[in-house]
Amino acid sequence: MLFYSFENQQQRREEGGSAFIEFQFCHLFTKDVKEIVSVDSIKNWKDDSLYVKDENTFYRQYSHIFDCGTYNNLQQGTVDVYGINYYSPSDTDSIVSKINRQKPQDYEILLEWLEKAKNYNGFYILGI
Image (cartoon, rainbow, N blue to C red; front, top):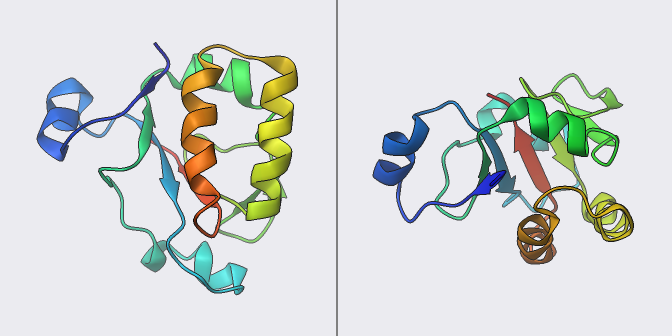
């Protein structure tokens, strides 16, 4: 299984500590991308996050899908599995469409989570 969710942080720590990529909802409702990708705006390890333990498989299966993220330095590109990646609500729609067409490994779990992301200001992929 590529994607994990945990009931609490103790369960996450027992499963792998901090060695996860974290998919996290963006709770900020500002349009200021600089604020959104600021390190000070990020609070890791949310209970409603989705986690990836195998970054190599994730990158092989999904890097071409998550190719429009905004980094902390405001540049855009392919998912950085070691940094901050922000995806806006419109990016989310495009990503969902790509996933539905390509159907990479464990895509159903990710699609279910991304549907919930539509209730927020997009989402982050926070690297290891």
